[in-house]
Image (cartoon, rainbow over all chains, first blue to last red):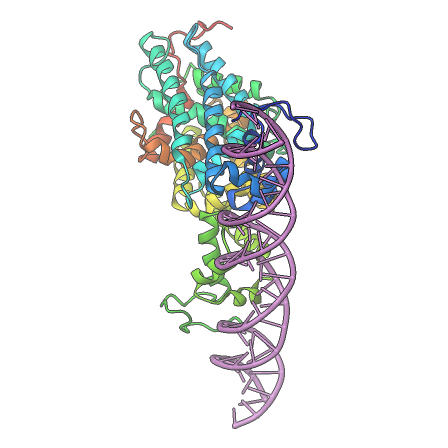
Length: 222
Length: 222
DNA sequence: ACAGTGCTCGACCAATCGGTCAATATCGGA
DNA sequence: TCCGATATTGACCGATTGGTCGAGCACTGT
């Protein structure tokens, strides 16, 4: 069945793993993460995988199924990766610092996965599988909300804000940093484009202590 | 030349404006905002515009040029729209509140433009015209940074944070909200998915006053 | 050595792609 | 009314698309 290993297939000495199916999935993941669905041809995938186009159809019934498989795998990997960023040890403020740092690092470590999944969220024309993308979302989100609620009930955080709103703010800061990094980089007054850790440290610090000096609190008009 | 107006061209009674070129641009904008470049065929654009495919090539030399024209127009419209969100009247905190609200509303009012431009930023495979996208970025960014710096020098805001970082945080919060709205909506604990004004009000309030109660400031360990 | 089974491939298919072209329709100015 | 210029079109092009097919290849169990 699928047990054969160690054979030399293409011209690359890579050939270990699940051979065949995995090879195709890897090639497709690479290409689909750079270009959109219609911009990637089955021929290109076959070429990248070092096999024939017809061979792909032995493992996948059609292009959509292959794309779906890639998306499912990427979504699962990303989900696991991001969930590991949350661990509820120590003070809430430290947990937040740790989470922000690890979460952003996870995004930056596997940009292909993030782009792949995120494109699926943004593309309104062909909703292929938002479910995959959304489930990872809910995981991290609820974990983060739980942390914030714990902080509130323990008195470490204010109680007059919506935890879900803060979670959105924090996740958004990281995702936005990830997406806009290239633009931020060559924009002069920005110094943190290549320092994700510093970015998150600053973000969390602002979130915790606020922008207004502690002395004047009720000066704002509305 | 281009002066002819009021004629009935297709089967739709729309026919006013610059006729022809504008008609094509509008059709292309609509389609390109939903689906990616390769997913939109010239045939589909012609169909949407109610003209023949060959006619498009009378106004645009090729598909890339058409896409570029659409992108340029969308980028300029969006740029103008977003710049209007910043006006430096009144106290800094009020300016921030006003900006956040107007900025997000602008995004939500013209989602096609945002998706069009933002996709161009995200797609790493074919950098067609990041310049267009980036210039609008720089505008809003620098304006926002200026506001924050003014607030700092006037003593209305802390001086120990990076204005560019806060600007990123605020813009990121809005963009993230725009992008993830559909997901946020059907996620139970979130109540602000359909209340952008409330979302921004909450965001700004948190940014200004921080998450930590004013009583305890230096309890965090590091 | 044989048969069975999955794996792999080149050749091929209809459909669609972006793009061209020559012919026609429609116009404003003389 | 005629003319030159612009608008608009259907028919057509080669190339590429996703997908199929049948014939070989490589392997395992007997």
